[in-house]
Image 1 (cartoon, rainbow, N blue to C red):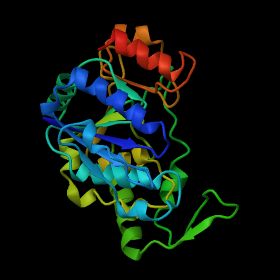
Image 2 (image 1 turned 60 degrees about the horizontal axis):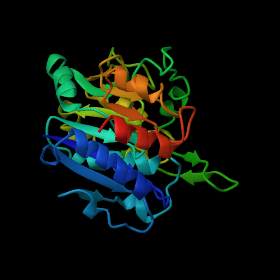
Image 3 (image 1 turned 45 degrees about the horizontal axis):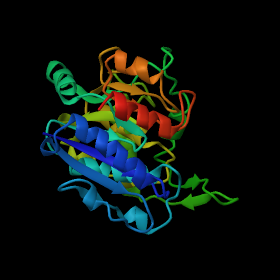
Length: 290
């Protein structure tokens, strides 16, 4: 048994995306093996419970007010979902990810062979085969302990936040612990479109507090990279041939037929890109991988 959590954005198209992604999950993972959590990111809660037997739909206090930056709601929802995770691992899927083959045995095999792993996904190797660049994140990470956070949102002026001393202290301690981990490079993370979190990480409940990260402008995948390293664990790439993840930040990392031939299990992103429109890509995978 394992957990799956999916953030569902606020746009009108998101429930349709979610339904197709769930269909792809259902085709390659028996529903009895899956503990599903949906993170409803709409200002008005939607009826998502009917989409999967026994699904858990969560919201956090952050949704009751305007999120201070584009990242905080995702970070809060992800950490809340990990608090509810059960089983051998927790799989994160965005609604523009699609499951194209069974994946649980492969992930479990990696975790069994390498128990020091906290997160598995598209880690150090980019979609084009080059090294991933994390250089934009260290400066933001080092600001997390400051008493004032100026966050640029939708308005002309930055929004000023005053995190509590406890929140600042928790962020500083996590960053210091992460930097003490010799396997960690500041800012390193598995790309957020789809990744797996080990039980060894989500069982560390004392680290699963989203409040220190609100307004930091850090992506949820970057925050999880910090928490993984702070827990004394490491991240592992699994985006090579016959490995589960074929994940790119924008569009698919290769043509759909090549991703199937390479033996991947989970692809991201099927939004409109160089390999076709979202409708075309979802239909191709529906016909050829389910």
